[in-house]
Length: 475
Length: 159
Image (cartoon, rainbow over all chains, first blue to last red; front, side, top):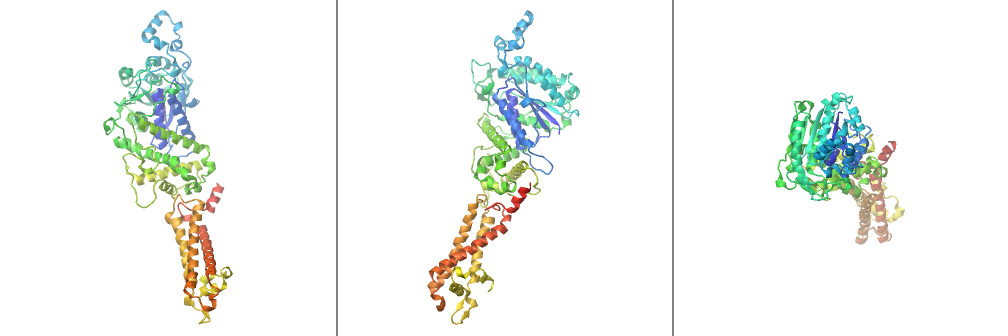
């Protein structure tokens, strides 16, 4: 399968990647394997480490599964793999960990006229900025530091792994209002299109490239001691858009450019970076992840002929209040509603139903899912992934604007978790977790009894949640 | 000995005289009166209770929450209780109504009713156990109650 190299730049890049991983885990369709690459000088940023851990779990779970024609399971179907030799999906930026920007550009060694130019472009605060937590919303710093892309070993490894048939694609995720993303996106794009040192330059320079640029969707509280100031977000966005207009869209460097933004903005605590930069998941990041999938699923021929521009619109804005599936357009609903509902049902079962005796059930005994399975590494990773998924849903639900398609904490009645969708109910018959177990216990047609236990576990849950979703909701 | 009598043949457990009475012994005839033979109806009641509770547990209720061995034991206890009562009542009603033929009257009383109830209960429990062995495999949710099916165990061992 062809690969889609997804570069997530800065904090927003990591958070969008997290949403993408959640969607892929739930089985949302993606026609390409994903190769995530995180570019963030702040290697202790909590958003980044959470995403990296999540992707590792995804890979462990997926490595135990097979996706042959006979298998119906779509949970974790899309492959996620790192660039060869790249540690933890992270594109390491040299000389940013322990030094000021002044040291990085070797200010002391510059001649007077260059110093004067530097002083014109960078404030004293910029020059004294400590880069170990990123560029703190200063794209002028990022545009200098990130120029090292093409010479790095990671870039060479990426280029070497690129398929010769030209079917692989690249997607870049960045925010336009910060430091790393706003400066990294044009630089990375320029490097990809123009780096003639790479042996695969021709293939890479002609491949299909898409990007999502995230417009301001949150602000930060005012803090005079912080270099991050959300009052500059709009002006920075305007400048960057003007630059993109002439240097990205204008020269057709991209095949598809997605713009995402919202007039309703959340306010986060002011944190320059590091482990404190742990923003709640946001609906805008989910929409940005949908842009990645849209690009991956768009046929080759539709991406020819100049840069295509896309925006995302809701069917119904709900006057800025919380959103559910009902507020989404048909295309989005069709692509994510059923997979997410299935995954949420599995999540609720593993959180609340399993402990009531899941291990004693027929589905477990028939498939040799015993103590050794439920105390094993695979199940531990599945549970851990589902905890993260649950947390992700809760974060989106409490953010502004809130996206709450599910009542994520509802335990009973189980099938009333989809907000805005009343489940069909029968007066007689099994209900809640009993119905879930009863469905898991079905005599499934085409069941591969010789498959691995991990395979059977995931296949069971996919089939059962698919049947339950069809039975309970008119989706 | 006909088919139904066969199941109650261990008469030493509850009394030879009670066996005679249940089989329909009549002093007036000096022989068994087939019309008074209570074993067929008693057996059908007993087996009916066994089948009813079995079908209820494994195929009608078929609950995913009643799959532990002690849930099965409770269902068996229900069978035991009901069949004991049916056996005991059949005898005690005859004792109280004085319908036991005179030559057997002094031998058939409360104690023999008690023992006959226990006999009937044990008979039902054996049937319930046999039914469990033979017919639970088609139950969707309870087929591994009270213990895992042998076929499943063997299949899993092969892998």
